[in-house]
Image (cartoon, rainbow, N blue to C red; front, side, top):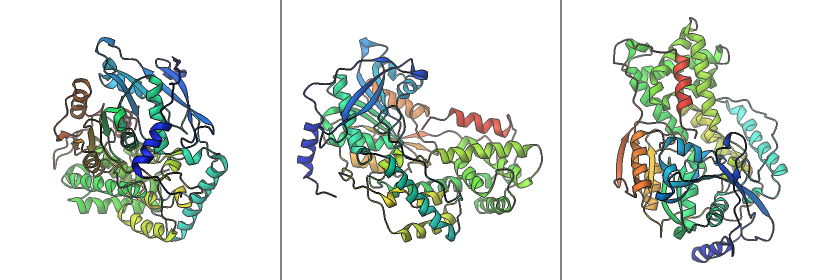
Length: 503
């Protein structure tokens, strides 16, 4: 890795590189397909900002103009996270769920490597290892071989763009969008990985950022392997909280009295379905179901019913339970993306000694089986990274733009709670904590957090330096009584998952 310039000189060089003498003229046209209600345009940006004469790539941008021009407050740039998430639909989502479309030009974009922008397309490797939430030691080498195969496949098809698909260059693309829109400052809303992207943008271009909200924040010190290891711990914390709640309602669910007894029942069911799966519902699906279901407090009763039905092994509720479990487990797997995800997260160095991963996998399959904890500890493409990043991740700071807001849910599994206070402390931002909540992405879904953020974006009024919002309520299941089921288990799970924010 080449030696970095001193920080001040490096930031000055970057600023000069990404501020064109004349902003590219933006021509808006209706977005294609389902996004036709929005406007889209395509910008050309340097592939390599250190050598802008060596080719450009396309970044596609979407916009929904403010509906009340008389009270226009500027541009709000939005990123849904990932890394690798498409942002073109975000202006529509924010307009549908908040009042910000009245005051702001809502702007989304597909980051470099993603979707309609110049895409990073990796070959699909041949899978060697099967999904197992508790793999035996003799399977570890196959998992490592899968990771190496994925890296080799991306190295073959990633072309020359892969070393430049990273957070720094995506932040520089954001500044190109700002310049093309003809504004001196942007406002910013980022979810999940988008929190880190926003913090990087503010660190690189502090004089070009105004208001900012970072929702479900990455921990500034966990870039990137530690971030994934902490996901497993967050899942386990949610499962423990769920088991304590169920253990106070043994008359309702019959899974045992107290947390320890409920967890023992879960493990008994895991042993049973490992020997005799119920259709596609095997031990790995069960572990995913328990982890994902325990995140969402409104589903706690449904998860307990699901496990009771699987344990019984028969009856009219069994098919309903299996369908609901498969939906929950698949949602957990869908949060693990590839391609751009596996490239951006390689911007930081990962261990290359496989024994480090194998040691963690042994521990995590035992301690954190729920929510596929072992996958968070396993080797990834980054273990075998085939290129050297041009730059190391930037130290985050806030120096020159207004105090922002960080929002964090206590039970969030994608970005564990500790990331929120740590990011708020690093940037000296104000923190909103959503208590007793495992959902990911609170703005637009949690009424209390949404109201506070609306006031910040619309009236410029910051919430308290540290404030509390309640999460989604737990089921109304009194202790030691039998709950009333208003809908079938499958309906309740599917309906709830459909209503979640798309992050």
